Length: 331
Ligand code: UFG
Image (cartoon, rainbow, N blue to C red; front, side):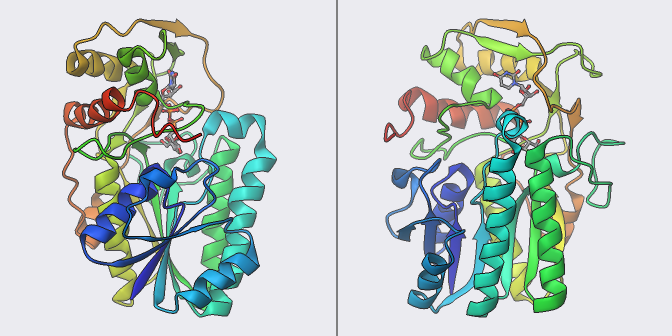
């Protein structure tokens, strides 16, 4: 049996490919390399460069790899502020990409998909921590594009029998503990890598977007999870589907929230650098607080995150950023 990882050269995809290979699973990777990095993909994976919305290309991938039994789908754009400026880019790449992928999966008879969804599908939650059954009302096009993808999978399951697991991640941070793979977006928009770029001296200062939110210190509160733990959750989700279980969604988070100010302080502790920062105006599309209730994943999938301490998470990220100040340096 082989697993096809779409977006396997991206931040979380590359960690998942790495874990699959470590477990001895035959792994096929498709990535357009628009945001992904070839150097992030474990050499033992079979790699195809291409777009998942290109039906003929995807038909060829399935035809050449008849052992593919399940798909793990990370191949989406995921930058909230960019989606606010350019929503159609998100609906085209993410939502319409999913439609084309599912069409080809129906043709190929591949009936299992694990989908990298997002806490952004919840919008501004009515209560915290957020449960999977809570209302999904996105407040940005990114979240809306992924909610539509979840709904499309639901109807394709009913009509075509493609079973899915939607994994709704909260905020992801950290790198492989040996520092060999990590986070490299260009441009970088995420909080922790920006904080660590300032610590490493490749960026002058941090801007904290807003300190007048409805949170204890006024800055947004987020729930951080390590890509190593996310990778394990995806593998457990494939196993869940292999056992013949029904389609469902799981939240993946640590169930603890840290404010942007607390992340800055923890990064100063870990790096022993000053990390200059200033308060800047709010950025559009940011909910006050996002914290996951992840009990369902722990109970049903048996998921046990190993990185449960924000300092440990930041240490792994710092190892990557301090040794790769220009990321993979391939763009
Ligand atoms: N932030 C700053 N300064 C920066 C960058 C970010 O203050 O330079 C703030 C943001 O305003 C926000 C927090 O840091 O309050 C986290 O922002 P990120 O851009 O790191 O992450 P987001 O919460 O916007 O989004 C991430 C993922 C999404 C996912 C979401 C769910 O990128 O894919 O988490 O929680 F949907």
